[in-house]
Amino acid sequence: MRTDLYTHPDYFNMDDLLSDEHKLVRDSARAWVKKEVSPIIDEHYEKATFPNNLLSGLGEIGAFGPYIPEEYGGPGLDHISYGLIMQELERCDSGLRSTASVQSSLVMYPIWKYGSEEQKQKYLPKLATGEMMGCFGLTEPDHGSNPGGMTTNFKDAGDGENVILNGAKMWISNAPFADIAVVWAKDETGRIYGIVVERGMEGFSTPEMHGKLSLRASSTGELIFVDVKVPKSHILPGRSGLGAPLSCLDSARFGIAWGALGAAMDCYDQALRYSKERTQFGVPIGAFQLIQKKLAEMITEITKAQLLTLRLGQLRNEGKATSAQISMAKRNNVEIALNIAREARQIHGGMGITSEYSIMRHMANLESVVTYEGTHDIHLLITGMDITGIPAFTREMPDLK
Image (tube, rainbow, N blue to C red; front, side, top):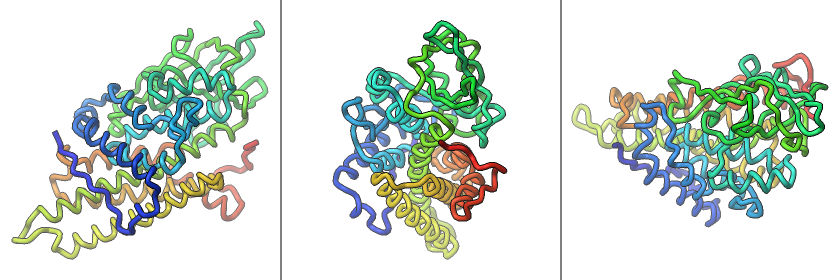
């Protein structure tokens, strides 16, 4: 069982820019992770199982919908607090952060923003504690980077009360154990709506996906809908169109930007410690110029990413963060995390591939993170479109109304 010796790197005294509440939230999450998750995560990763026993604990530290108002059962924290919690979770494992991120940004967020008062009261308090878990159905087998091409659809059941849902979603985190799914589907006019599907509805199944070599401690599955009768009261009334699910992805990508930075900091922390302990040619390997170069570049990139995420969190709190700014942060932070993980693995030599250290697990996990919630290349093109005004990934301007 690996001992969690993590020490938070803070080269530019970033803690001075955080409130006491921010630091309390972060430190509480860190203490919980060290005690409850770090000792067991390697075993779950190797067995490709998700530690369901952690769900209530995640609820207790506020990892589920940190920014959800207290009136709906949430902690009522700000977006920087959300980011800091995601950072602490992914510092341990990306799969753990994915579970919390999906619950917060892709299930609770759309219900809070676009749901009816009845839907908010019914679902949010139980989702906040982990008593109820959810998943988000957007990606389809043939529609990933182009979600607007989805074929999942619903039509009026003709009874005045229900709709009939058909289709399939793929690569869905939390699907195998989720109690509800916030599913995005087209009505008979082709307009996209969110609809809450509950486990147990006839024709709804969630087969688990196997054979993953990344995010192994996260539960991933499909959503299959075969003539599922869903009450019309389950349709989110607050917003329709592709912009609705994309706004949820903004919240999730924001959390990923913070989370991936956590993985980078963990790899750096281990590499720095190892460089002082491992000796070759009679001296610690940290005495060699090439090792110092790697470490110096790691902490430089981490510090730049810390400044980027903090400023993004401030903008998010003010309601000013744009989708393009969030895309830039997600893309940058995942990229630097991958690079740092690879360099840290080299510093560890052969030991870097063992489960005694979390580096190889971070490397494998980040290969998923660099792809999901918008691929690395798509985020680059989002920035390109934002600065030029010309979309390069589609020949038509998307309708986000």
